[in-house]
Amino acid sequence: MEQCWNPGEISKRVAGQRLREHEMNDRTPGDASPNEKAGPDGEPAEARATTRASDLEVPHAACILETPPDPCTVVIIGASGDLTARKIVPALYNLYRNKGLPESFAVVGCARSSLDDDAFREKMETAVEGAPLSDDMEWASFAPHLLYRIVDYEEPETFRRLADELQKVDEAFGTPGNRIFYLAIPPKLYRSVARSIGRAGLAREKEDGRRWSRIVVEKPFGHDLASAADLDAVLHESWEEHQIYRIDHYLAKETVQNILMFRFANAIFEPVWNRRYIESVHITAAETLGVEHRAGYYDQAGVLRDMFQNHMMQLLSLTAMDPPSLFEADRVRDEKVRVYRSLRPFPVDRIEEFLILGQYGAGTVRGKRVPAYRDEPGVDPHSLTPTFARMKVFLDNWRWQGVPFHLTSGKRLARKLTEIRIRFKEVPHSMFRGTLGEHITTNELVLGIYPEEKITLTFQTKNPGARLCLRTVTMDFHYHQNYSGPMLEAYEKVLLDCMVGDHMLFWRQDGVELCWTFLTPILEQCETCGERAELLYPYDSGTWGPKQARERA
Image 1 (cartoon, rainbow, N blue to C red):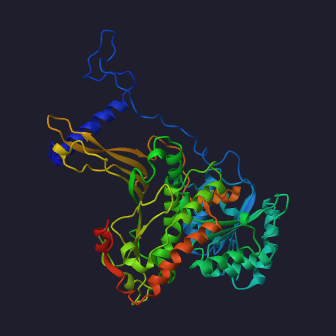
Image 2: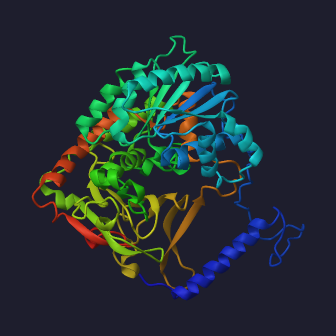
Image 3: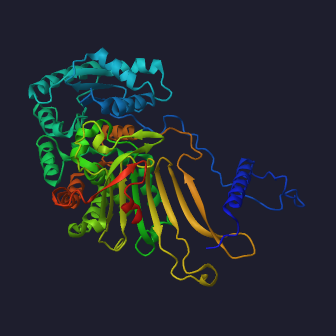
């Protein structure tokens, strides 16, 4: 396609246009620019309307809840670990600062480490030092709600003693038996700890709903289909389904939640959201980090278990699902389950045509040299664990038949990026073939999740000038544009939802099992075939993965 200007001239003109748009948006409606000639009545001859929305000016705590949750105690099992310090307690502290917690609450940390209340509070104070707008007075009022009790995960008797301790906490803090048990422990301990909590009588609720008990389980939910079903059976020994919260923090990201709003609160997108107009869908979740402190877990799991069974499948379902009749937890999750049921069985006999696996080698990320995966502390030096995967899947249903969904995730890639890219089909007939050729650049819609939280749509326009030539332009929306109100981080949102009993952003067991049903044959083929090493392509850290994956992009 021929362009009217060279790239340098285009950049200058685009920059100038943006400056003019910025100046127009900063003007008061009705003001004439210096270059506009006034009409006979003093009005500008060329009327211009600003497209800038006024800031909503939402009060700082308005987006939390209209009424606070019920008084409750949050019991963190594994409180001496990294997840508690990095995510859980900072999230609870920010909720407290934004008036998102109930007036009567307590946080009881439980672990094997020999800590007392003061030592636990000191450790958590260090963890929240980087919190924005942190205030010493706020921490001083929050800290007394933090308590610590020693438990042995393998010893059920310690949980019976914990039950007695929690009764004392209820009396001291005015929390009437409402409890959340957050399992911030390695997955191999889920079964024994959940069983011990239940056998200590801590899962029992009052039938009138005036005393509730809930358990939060972090992914992964099992290692394969059989272990996922086994974990679920253990949970249901003591807990009802409405008490179980299978957390996937990806779902609580604001831009992920916005996918359904974007699709179903706007009439213009749904008519083209199908196989007639969409050529392909590309879902990417790229990381620059390596395995860090998770080597022991990751070398057994790999990228397929770590990312595809949960995060990638959730992004797939939000992109592909049909609209629910009501925006309610089970109706939304019903539609997600229909997507998982529509997944075409993976052709494991031709796995190399639909799946590319890679493992990062040494390289440079953000100007810093980083080691190869096999040289990371705690990783088997002969490991064949994949750290990158690009998978092509299909949905066998009326809406999506024949449309490929490309799912890509990996570690130590060029930059951290999470996005959903919708690539539309070419125009069915090019009336411009005589001047522009047969092919016109297709439209693309990008739902940016990280780092740029935005939505962009590209389309073709005529370049100004005497010659007929097209240019691709972008219309975009930044999620935080013209908004200065409060935002909930992912862990704040899921903790709050757990307190109020909202399952919208949590997995349901049928969805978990359907995803494992799809992935387990792939895992078995990848982990047992004789050519396992040949299916694993190396790539340098700081690149976009194996060249074989880029060639098929």
